Amino acid sequence: MRLFLISCAVFALAACQKPAEPVSNEASAPAEAGPVKGVDRTHKGAAAADASFNDPDGNPTSLTAFAGKPTLVNLWATWCAPCVKELPTLDALARSKDGKLNVIAVSQDMGPHASVEAFLEHQKIATLDSYQDPKMALSGALGAPVMPTSILFDANGKEVWRYVGDLDWTGPEAAKLLAEAGVAKGS
Image 1 (cartoon, rainbow, N blue to C red):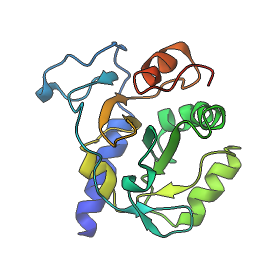
Image 2 (spheres, rainbow, N blue to C red; image 1 turned 180 degrees about the vertical axis):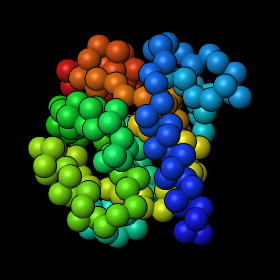
Image 3 (tube, rainbow, N blue to C red; image 1 turned 45 degrees about the vertical axis):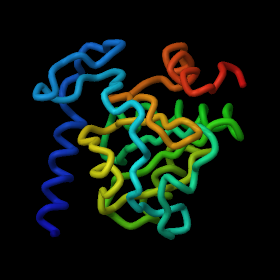
Image 4 (cartoon, helix red, strand yellow; image 1 turned 60 degrees about the vertical axis):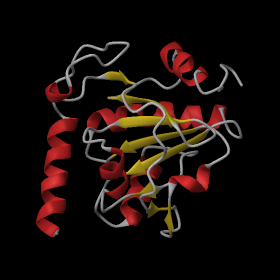
């Protein structure tokens, strides 16, 4: 099992650091070509995975805990440069959409939870909580091999889209995408 987890981490690291591909509005490459940076709607309508991950207190939780309002799940890691680059914009989004959109950034780091908390504090991430998936159960259940990957679920827990790669979550492209789940710009 340990070898499997190490293999997953190595694969995720390699995927995270692969050269950036051109951003497209829709992922259109064949599945065998691998994920393309940008929007992927191939899982639209799929129910949120019931995989367990840790809440900020270290207790098990799942995406069902966030039902009732749109939820943006971001899979990230401290060692992933594009992930770290987009964290401040996710933090700003969480702050601006408080009460209207759940923004759940789930670290895929396998180290102790305290190290994730310290990393977020060092990066001055004040709004996002320190969720962690050290066994990569959530990313595996969601079929998200590349980090960062962000997945928007509607209020009913159905996938709207996923965004592969980093994005400025305070920009116009993000606002347009979030509007698809009823999260209006400026609200």
